[in-house]
Length: 138
Image (cartoon, rainbow, N blue to C red; front, side, top):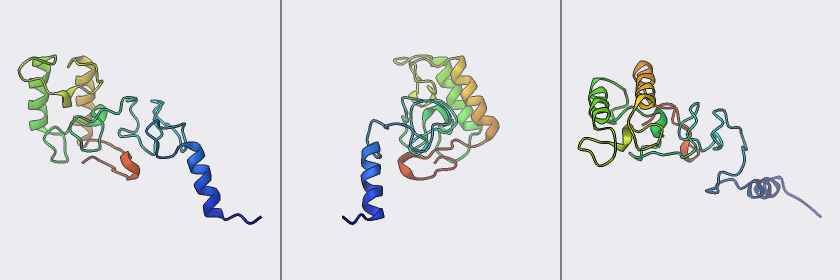
């Protein structure tokens, strides 16, 4: 019986669940230990098991403080975060789910720490969402 390398690799990948929505097992690793393989993680280096990305830019809320989508985290993003922080929870005027980096429906100290880290770094990310490397989102 003759086997091809490509056929073997395809069968191996299917057995591991590569591409499944369940993120079956760490194929390449899970550096941030959030249960999502680094190959699909939308916020590498910061645990975000829910993979929440409310603005849909491919960069998870946990490491995306670029609320105006201009590629950098700056003064306008701070103004947005300030409004979110004052609003605090969903239903309040000014609440913006993009600012909820820890996905707990409250804008608080942990979200400020995540924003601060993005502000100091100057760029959001990194992400490897959808099998594409996005060093800094977007």
